[in-house]
Amino acid sequence: MNATLKHYLDRATTFTWQPEPVDVADMDGVVVIPALAESNSLLHTLGDLAANSRESLRHTMVLVVVNNRPAGSAAQEDIDNNQRTLGLLTAWRNSCPELRLTWIDASSPGRELAVREGVGLARKIGLDWGARWLAEANREDGALICLDADTRVQSNYLGAIRDFYSNAGRWAAVVDYAHPLEHDGHEHTAIIRYEIFLRYCELGLLHAASPYAYPSIGSTISCTAKAYAYAGGMKRRQAGEDFYFLEKLAKTGHISRLYETTVIPAARASHRVPFGTGRSMQAFATGGDELNTLYRPGIYSVLKDWFALATEMLEAPPVQIERQARGLCPELAGFLTQQRFREQMAKLQTNAGNANQLKLQFLRWFDAFRTMKCMHHLRDSVYPDCPLSEAVCALLSAMNMPVAARPGERELLLHLRDICHGQREHTGGLYRP
Image (cartoon, rainbow, N blue to C red; front, side):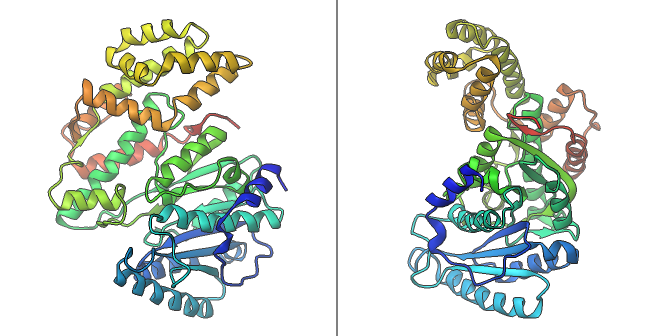
């Protein structure tokens, strides 16, 4: 067993939650689905998985983590829904034996998540078990696959992922996604704008030549068991666990884009997490304007110039790098001062053994989270948000990509999907295979 994977599993504290007994022989992939009050949606997701090829189903375990906080911290209707889910899972396994299905009860009294825990821990519980099974089967390059209980998948979903990880040296991937667009009225507008936001941010970071240019959507993520351990496992967060986990995967390996299949996340409002699809939908439905505007494209241009400058001058005195950054954008230099750039850069220069190591260490320091903080600083100080269509058209123009004059929002989204699909050679992470 890989030493890092063994060390991770030896220290894991999530194995107190036990799955229903299941035969894990001849398995090379595990799909992990956290479920909170999803008794209706989950059955559709399981049905989609069951429609995949028999060969893929034979080698893939599906692990559902039914979870909630204790009574008083969780809504009683959610707890009741979870208990229905546990009964339905038993019935489903009996009626559909070709789907290798098991589950963990993190819902019943005495088994709940702690008061301040949420989806991050639920994912972690399932992924830790998946990593353990793959390690015990000597399949450290087998796939750990994140999915959500309200997300639909295609009939080639498992096969496409298995084919991807059958190639040696794979580390991690994000599957293509597309929100359903058949809704009406306010909800239809909200989901179109939210997906435009996601794809716009990805393309903006791609334009900036950031190694963190990928969508952060939990139901699209997969990685090998070995990569999971090197990334330190899933983060125990109530929200944003996908963002921080992908950041760690990018710092330790190579994140590919998998366009051979598509996941369809739900387009619905939710109060469960402080940000993400559901929260954005809910905010828009109640009169919020957060989906009406986007980051101004000038922010991505500043980042592009900064990455080019910094990686070219990495061995120069930090004060000189910061001075050059001030010439690019005074507010960028102000942000670097706030982040103690000179001090941090001096440490990196002292500790790096060569120029390549120094570049890697710099990009680990100016990571996805620090990039986001920099964008917010630039937005708040010099580049205020601008209307959605204006922002997208300006960014595509800066990237020398075509866009129709005065496109409607649906048309704009479909165009962005095509552009993202056209970036097949682009991948994230600090290492190249």
